[in-house]
Image 1: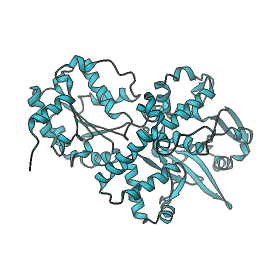
Image 2 (image 1 turned 135 degrees about the vertical axis):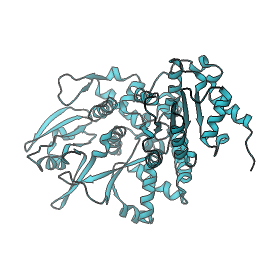
Image 3 (image 1 turned 180 degrees about the vertical axis):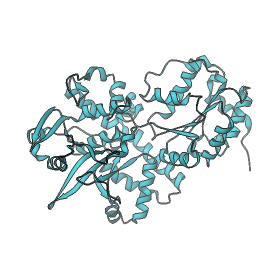
Image 4 (image 1 turned 90 degrees about the vertical axis):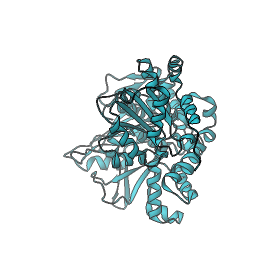
Length: 478
């Protein structure tokens, strides 16, 4: 078998690691913006007190590679030896199928440092190396003074491998799409539109201009989940071309088939397109199988693959008392990034028919970096001959009782007609001994109403989306 010349591999490594030759030039100007999660990531990545590799995972286009570059720049500014830092993107053709140990040997040869020195070694897109988890575990044990950081876009696949083979050796760090709070910050609008609310017991924040905040929220739904679209007018003007095709071509047509050996790519594409268009609606395996003609077990696998790439998340159903069902016959499927819908189809306007479901999708997306996500459900049950539903229910894992329940609405109508929130009212009255705080979002109004003894808090959807994102970033209960 023909081999790639060592000199060509070394030239590639030198191009990817310019700080070896000129660390001052490599530091350069500071990045204008960092993700809100960068400080926590940096603290984990540069902690030599724990012998663990750090696995940075998340969907495509959320800023993982930029965060890794920022980590290198921070280390250089803090005086870390530039020749002790290696950055290698494993999907580079020159490194194809090359063992990680071989790359490290070339790194040592080219820079002349010793393996006992403190080092930072970064492997980007590591999932493209077969059995990467076995190699990385061995290296983590072999080099106690080296901080290994790996990243990849097939997040759930990475997590599965890290749990199976890296127990006690890997730490996972998930980077979600931009939160609404980050989007406002990046746009320079957070200080202008958001103020602390010192009077409200349940609302930490208030807005100075709900109209402007709603306009920013629409922008967030259309392109705000992707950092590059926030800063690049050309991408923002044609998200379907620059981001929509990237999702389809790189994730559905390349990432997933290569990782899971999928044969019928078009079948997977049709399923994802259907879910993306109907994000936030209840679906079932039986219904999908009946409408598509695809076997239930095949659809079940496809759903797992789409979750593996963090394109969707499935949310479990509970009944009117907050109890989960043993089998997940019905569930809701949400896009993990609300901007994906615009990237695949068309941009939303504030009066668009899909605004309710996409506002709900945006609310869910704020929790993706929170441990609470697994405790967030939706409720659906029979009340006589009618179906009742509540959009979001948080179940306390300690007591298994509902902690709160919300309806996500993009309308002010329910402030004047709160009695129409029949599912929410019935849910709140189900357990009078353990009152469940309930609320319903609006387009622009803040109010409190009472129906049959049930107090309902009404709050602007965009402001609620901001508050959840900000709370999660700060580690507060959302």
